[in-house]
Image (tube, rainbow, N blue to C red; front, side):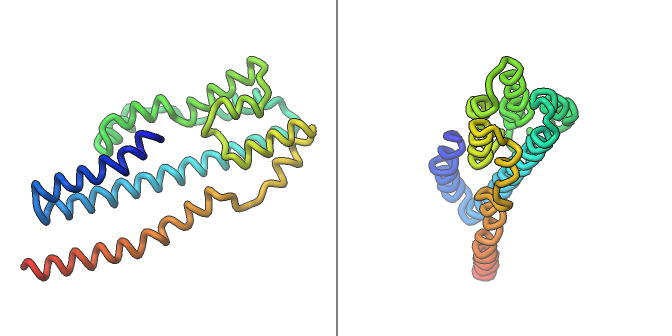
Length: 196
């Protein structure tokens, strides 16, 4: 996450200044186009991560409700997931070079595999979730911890609010982005009319 923050706060403005000085108005338009694409990718990633965390919550709720061993349910869930493909890696290379290698090393399935390994080694679920970040949100991790200490995991997972904080940002981001998108289109049109 630190590399992403570094890119957005230092790398992106430096790239914008370079493109503006090197290519003039065309560089500014190219920079705005790249910013829109990268923001869309970031939004898609956040939405993907939220959906995977919700999917994992449903798996945990099912395991708790059926009194099945969590390790066995998670292993079956992991085995049912689609595998990585070379075609996906080739396509993602053109989106952002090197991203696919980072994705494979830090993928949700890799984290889930580490979580299953910890659970099979006898680590309690709440500690395993703490040791493997990004598998669940903070609210779900808190509910699992409470459920472990009270012995009522099923009730703790059922009492989670329907709308957690991550989904609010996922729904709010496009609404906040829309005025900037309209302003950008207006600026592009005005610049085009003034130049030509």
